[in-house]
Length: 418
Length: 171
Image (cartoon, rainbow over all chains, first blue to last red; front, side, top):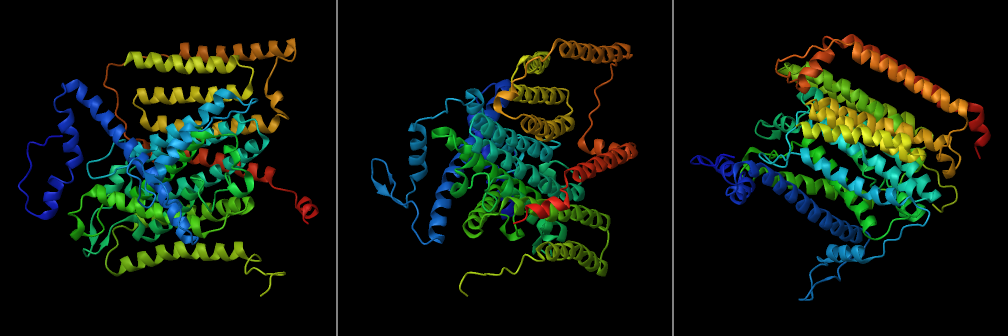
């Protein structure tokens, strides 16, 4: 990065772009500037990898703590609060809990069943974690913070995510436990079912922005209508529908409640994780949370304007702070959903994906085509455009919802006291 | 650059060869998937980013599942996943099939007239590929789409339950 020319700031936002925006790059260049030119690229890449690993590792640690605390609060109990900070013995809301958990996982015995396929049993968590870390590479975290700029970034993201299914299968098969294998097959059925709505939900974005590059998709969402409503995709009818479908499919893809059937701690003895213990088990959890964080980051990039500020008057806050804020809001949403919704049954799960989400996502693709064909409409025609697009989203939703829930709701309690 | 190509080629061919040699079907299938990864890496090396990611998405994400499910659903027990050559006639027919496929492919490769070009490699962005697919090759794309839809519908018809059976199973 050429930092020799820092323009004299005219306004607050320009000043922030000149310095705060570039602060991570400035810090990096301070470290690498003394290196000879051919080495600089390598060290720069290594630094971005280290930063991604440490930032998201810490985020993972504290999301687990936040999840346990918030779930505890929602269920009227305090959650973990007794882990003191070592040496000074200060209990600070149990903030040292993730590190205590890490030490516990590391020092536990690693039990491998005698009949297990040892190599695959070892490889499964490694493969899972490796591929979920790969997905972090293409997400634009800030105006200047994209680890890898790819022409087909969105495609890369979903290609790297596709390999997680393989790891689940490996874990289930290598454990040599019929419950693990059955649960792995169920998990695969779920992952394959929800991969379709997940992929179909991002197609409208590609259609409208006519780009597969994550930076260009974020750039397409810049600007505000009347300085008030941001041009984020979520504020259009097709974008809203796409965002909701994407988030539901992301919940299912990351095995989160209410789609946590593969694990289902209370019923299934943790499914394909049954024969895993110690740090391998922790690695599975790490990969699950990484997947959740990466999918949230992708949802932000595709629908929530990426690192864009929601208002032109808030642009002085650097872009990566906005990205982090949106990410945390989405993660808290995930936790909230986990605390609120009961788990689905297997048939409900697949029926919901194939009979409801996939048709809706397909209709939404057509809706986005209409939206991009009518982009030149103006004045009163624009209201018509909005109306037609909204009807195309809401109409099928109401009709299909009525048809699918006919005879199911309202629930009749035959034996419970009323 | 050439060193990377050699590495990729050795990885792809070695995994494919070991997949053939192993007797355990699941291990063979997983190694085959590793080999597909090697092919994707080769596409990346050649600068065909889009094809590489599509290869991973389609082969590692979807086709691998078909292979693994086929192995698991057609074998009765874990011991059954270990294959042995059943009979001499079967081994001979396998060799004949292999040699025939190799012959056809080799004839096609050596028969093709490859003119080495000195022009710079074309830089096809994803947008160009999309324009090509939707413009010049739109008919082919549509025909493939219809073919896949027919196959999907056929699979649904085959897998759909007999309505009488569901009634019998109902509590």
